[in-house]
Amino acid sequence: MGQLKPAVYIVGAGPGDPDLVTVQAQKLIQQADVIVYADSLVPREILEWCRPEAEVVPTSTQTLEDILPIMIDRVRSHHTVLRLHSGDPCLYGALHEQMQALAAADIPFEVIPGISAFQLAAARLQVELTIPGLVQTIILTRMSGRTQVPESEELSSLAAHQASLCLYLSAHHVQESQQRLLVHYSPQTPVAICFHLGWPDEQIWVVPLAAMAATTAEHQLTRTTLYVISPALAKDLGQRRSRLYHPEHSHLFRPSTDH
Image 1 (tube, one colour):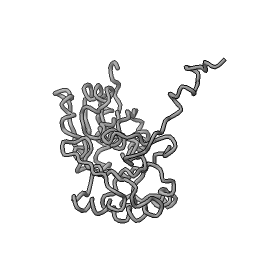
Image 2: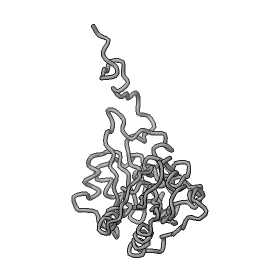
Image 3: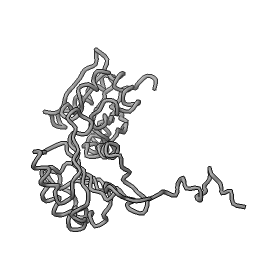
Image 4: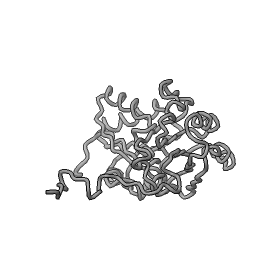
């Protein structure tokens, strides 16, 4: 990677498990002068890679107006700043406004992606969310809360696709979410309720859609919960095969042997 230039590096730390941090993210953590991190969402263990002299700034009690001056000041003082986000910064990470403010202040920045919770959920469940002949689309969305969802992305209209739908930041609105999903999904559609993925207290329940709200209430889930609603979670899907590795499928690297 070489010597880092003074800049803000906006880095995805993954869903919680330090082993799921990317190699590039780990190298940046090891080299940064200043670590500005979401301490309520990023495990403290990830900071064990920091240099002993690095400045560590937790941000769970701060607003963007508190955080940005720190990052701008440190870069102008010729330091490298690591802004450490949970998951992937491009998903519900308040990334847009940070980049706008840094650009307006003429502060260089880079974005380094991380693994998102929906990817870890699929791995834990040992499923493919895009199964040939069944589902080929993944929708990542949320219910309206303090941050409003555009009317054109209302949940029941997205449910009409009957795709693999991953619902973030919606545990507080799970009853309403269930009602809107049931407009188009069968009540028996499997739902994976994934709590605190990647953390030591991780738990996953797979239930019918009709039981999504009741299961959430039973376990008193209010935050860090991801819902995966998908026909791909069904137990018996039969024989379904992609054309990609099929012997009858030829492509640039595997030409047809027919004569």
